[in-house]
Amino acid sequence: MPKTNDLNDVMVGKILILNILFHVLSGIFTGVWIADLVAPTGDMTLLTWLETIMSAVAIAAGLSYGSYIALTHIPTVPKAKRNQVMGIFVAAYVAVAIMLGIASSSVLASASGEVAHMETSLTTQTEATQARQRAAASLINRSSVMNDCVSSAGNMSIQEVGTGVYSGEGGNIGQVATALTNISEGCANARAAIFASRAKLERLFFRIDRLLIDTRRVIDSDMERHEKMVAVRKNGENFTRLTREVNDALPVEAVQAVADAMRKDWLAAGLPPSAAAAITHNFDGMAEELTEGLDDIAALKEKAIPTMPVVSNMAYLALYPEATIAAIAVGACIELIPLGGILLGFVMVTQKGSGGGGNLLRPSEVATPPRRVGRPRKA
Image 1 (spheres, rainbow, N blue to C red):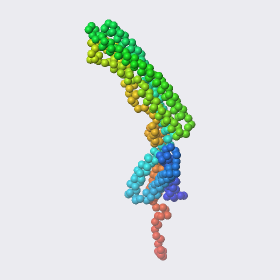
Image 2: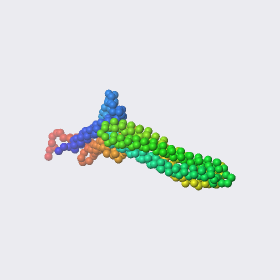
Image 3: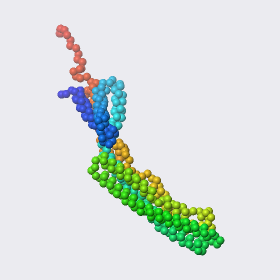
Image 4: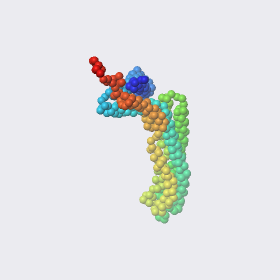
């Protein structure tokens, strides 16, 4: 029957071999991660290959030697300091394992992270486009208020010139008529700006829709990963440019200027009280309709335009945990399973009890009483 210490030695040897295999795997993943850092475009030179290979070998060799030290040398430390030394080793190993686990996870999650990044960018761009389409439709719908403004202000100006009904007896007919005419012309100019921007916005939204469709086609295509990312980023830059043109084409300022003109303090401007009251009464409602939701549209123009920023593979782990959770789990297993093996081997080597461990003497080493030499005692 095999001796307990022999069994422990065999198990520790197997654990060490298993750890070395995991450390080699960790070194490979780390090498891929380093290759992505030193050659982000994928073009590897002799120097970058040398850096990658040496880094992978250093990681695998360092971790393997650390496992060897933990399983063969730390158990020989005196018992008083053994637990302290092992605690320091485990803390250092966990710190290294966390960093290497993140590196391994980022390598494994690169493909799914890129897809999630592109999908999220496309969704954000689509939502931004829809928000601006609603804003444009809201501004265009205000043209009916402009029509009422032009008609009402023009008719009031004509009545004022003919009868002086708004300025009152002894009032300045010309001043009141001029103010009404200015309001009518301002509404007409704003209406023209809305109609001009509508044609331009339709062309811009058509181009943006085609761009978003092309982005969807690229994401769903079988293109090489790097080429796909380049194509999507290029579309993102074009989207930013077109969206900036859309912001410039939204006639927020023209509509706001007309509303401000309607709400002017006509009494302070020198108009007779009756004329100021008539203008305020007729145009306050129109100004309210023109400015409803206008601040939100103005804020939308100032809002940052969504695009597709360049992020590292490691950032995918934090940005899209739902898409990368499997890679995170695999990376953690690759780095933590060897630690479990080290702790198991350490316990097996240092255990005490009936099974015998590293601190118990082998049966062949147990002291036997010395034989007595000489003549046997007489009975």
